Length: 466
Image (cartoon, rainbow, N blue to C red; front, top):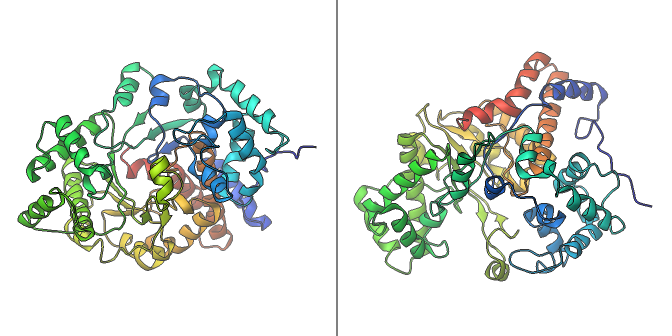
């Protein structure tokens, strides 16, 4: 017999009954808040075309690297899951997932997926080999209905705004189509210049050629290159962007003289580039991007600390973002000094820093954010957007940086229906953390209720100028 699937109303709340009761009351203040999703990687074409999702695998398996990286770690080939351009029967790909659903016990993916299965599709039995076809048929059939089209789901889950992420080489045709359609849903872009600021990014020189064509500037000359960025940023802002996003290997920044920067640019565009020059150029470009943010008002997000595409054969066969990015040790105090020396004291700027290296929370990031007016801390992110990761973030950051030098929560996902599930987890964890402070008489409950709303809604909206 299949095992039942049910979502306990007190899930993720503290075990202590008195503290749990406080968490329940706090959660009642935030459960129905609109969702602000200020950073993520959903596909804007979903809302531009409003075409139905094809099947269960297409919606829930293919976009979610959390899911297929776990299956891959247990010997399931990406080809058999239909990842990338691989051709596979989606029902059979789903069966491979269902047969191994036990692998996700104790992971945040299990929490998110169970929420989607129960809340979105009304399924009341656990996913397993036995229920694989039942799940596939129910989900795929419901996806044919108008209620499960992308725009309807956006409205159903009370999403106020979603920010996607595009490179300067994107023509933003889907964002333009959304704006011209008359639909009231707010889907905006964010400027992610990595393909044209990282000399080690695949196709860097060809990318500069495309940037030249799009902008009409000579992107192999330093002044034309910077002008092209300003022009593309302005276009992104016109398409709704309020932020930029920078996924560099490290947090290093630099403050070269104009002549030094131009000389370095000539070296990195001349041909083969040394790793030292590549790192210095990325560092200089973070400072250049900050200078542009000071001018155009776009919020700057810095996402360092991932060794991208660690599995070289997977990268060569399937491309980027296939679950093989691995966290690395990251230093911030000296790395950010050049940028913060120039812009950190500006209260009118927003520089949001994320980390995959939790050891820096209390030692480096909280003290930095607790001092510099421009600097704010992004939430527990990527590998740490889990119940325990979120608790660790609050425990290690709050005493030094407070709550108001953080920016609430963002989901950073490609999996659309995990967005409401992820925000629900974040709200529950924050309510549990606040409930403990109330139970320990470190805060009044009315203060905690205000904070719960700020953490679940207001801080993200303000930080990202939404």
